Image 1 (spheres, helix red, strand yellow):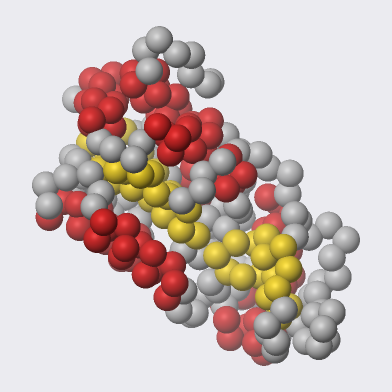
Image 2: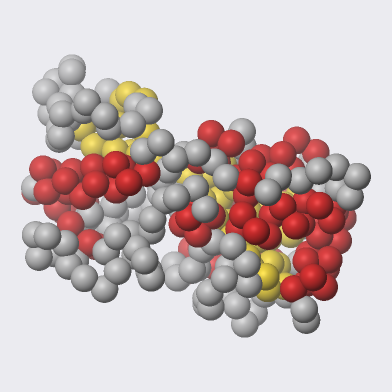
Length: 260
């Protein structure tokens, strides 16, 4: 199927559906200038860190516990690359859909906070967010816009222990509250599932797509590359997120201008 016809088919499904689940990964933020830490062009693609560790070891829960200054070194590097980034058209149009549909939920692996910055409210940040710090010893938490001026690693102002980002590091469990929210969304009913800018390498990311396939619901992948879901979804758009979402919006709203 040609790209224009595939866009027409996906837009028609989206226009009919009132309850949509978007699953997003690093690819949706690439058009905001954010690098991935893995993958072609990523910060740590196919190489070790400067300390001779693979990034999965450097950014692990075990390293944060034993050598927080080392884990923080690479967390701060990633945050610095993300600093100042703004939501792109894909983030903004997903947020706009939330205003006109009965339910739009975003399940994101991203820790950059761009979905919330774009205006999305029903967001499940499965891997947490860089913009919230929590103490490793007490219950103190704080929100930060970025890490500019932050002592690395930061200390808790209440007890002096090391603080860490409220993110899921390698080897750590996913947050139960986020998983429960996803289960509730699926139990309440979803009419369409779209995987956007994610390699879907983790089974828990691909699971909602397979859940929809088992129920005969429309499934869509928006990704210029090949992924684990490419061969099984009903509709595949080999486009970047910021290319595909404006085209879909134009088809759903022919009388309204769409963002570029």
